[in-house]
Amino acid sequence: MTTAKLRPHDPIVSVYPLPLDAESARDEARRARRLRKRLPPGHPYRRLPLWMPYSLARLIAGSDPSSRPRG
Image 1 (cartoon, rainbow, N blue to C red):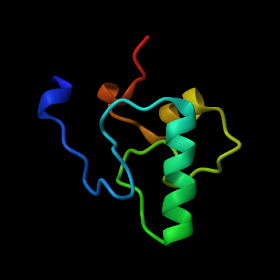
Image 2: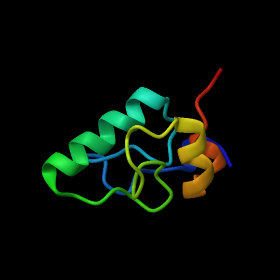
Image 3: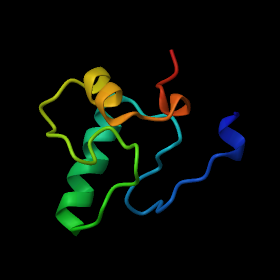
């Protein structure tokens, strides 16, 4: 699936399932917690602490392969 067909559930809170790097994912999680919003299902930090490494958080959360950072 291409990223052109993917659309965020709530772009104010998160751009997931579009590609995210570790810092963007943590920033989204901080913003969502501050705004008392829920991150979309599959977001690496939806139910996990921010100190967890990004790759491990993606694995545990079952993140969509399309959200892998480019590079």
